[in-house]
Length: 126
Image (cartoon, rainbow, N blue to C red; front, side):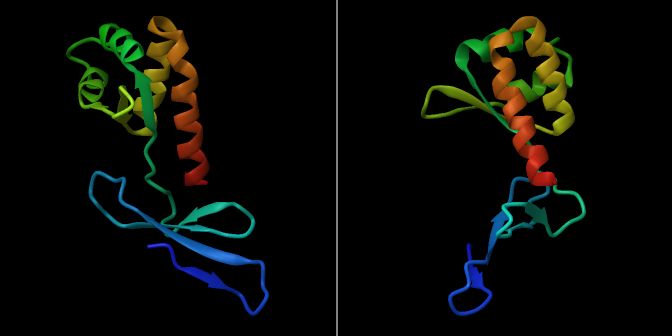
């Protein structure tokens, strides 16, 4: 659903409404993009989660670096293989921060993808 609502005839200012469902609860969150290019949420805090996409080599290195009994290992195991032969991991901001820390030690070339996913999620959260 992407309704476009103008402010009047010939107006350049517009409001886009974007509905996303990237929450564990399936709760509907509505994001609004204003002409200022700033995103805001219908809730006080947007539960946007970082989506981290890693190569299979990076994924394997991080999986080896995470203890099998850790929540991080479980999160990595829940990754999904994409058509582009990468692994996509949806996680909380806290988990992404831990993953970044592990990546710094075991797979430094994965750090930029993780940091980018964190940055995007924080930008959306406002």
